[in-house]
Length: 297
Image: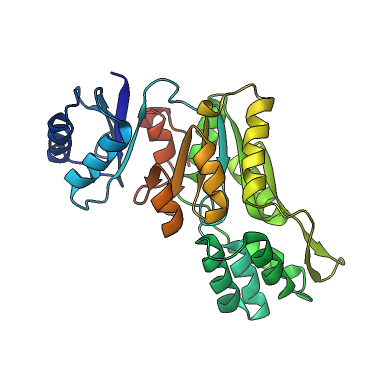
């Protein structure tokens, strides 16, 4: 079979009846689906098929699922396992927006979070919005960074994703519009081999309200993806990128497998692959990893 449709869901959510409905839907469109192959019982299953465009197959599966909490990713079988992962950090690898949480210590969380929301949905220029938010934090004591870090939590499946891909020879990199203070710690906690982000300027005691130039933005994320792929001697088809905000769209669109993870509407509507229900292990199942191959989170 030339293609595979992977169904991924929270544990226990995929039933044999769902699989039957989807296989029937694919067959009705002229596809030739073969027997299901469980990657994790009740949680992830491959449905190999041929004779149908993968985007059509994914759309047919979503229609057959009738709003069930199941993610669908269709792609060619060849080159399915990727050798380079580029991941956004905020609201992707960690559960929060670290700049918004930092702003809470200045009593500005709601104001900053609204700018973040609009920026991540593509309504504002990212670089201008970042400078505006950082300027609002001028004079904030540096211990607020440590306090914010103590309240930062990994997204479920984040460590499993990075550890498993790294153990299988992939390079894993964070590419964040956030700050090196956090990306360095997240990289160490998860096992990312490199991290790329912005740098907050301070005087040793308080934040200056500025960020080092140039801003690490949408274009910089894409440049990091292409540069790392070239350095590793990889084609873009051997890469996977994941993120949730508008500044992730360029790298998501360029990667061999670009995934919108619990993403903002503008990103979810543009990405060819999206994960709305499962945790980050979904990116491993999408690459054909079985539950028995996935390292502990």
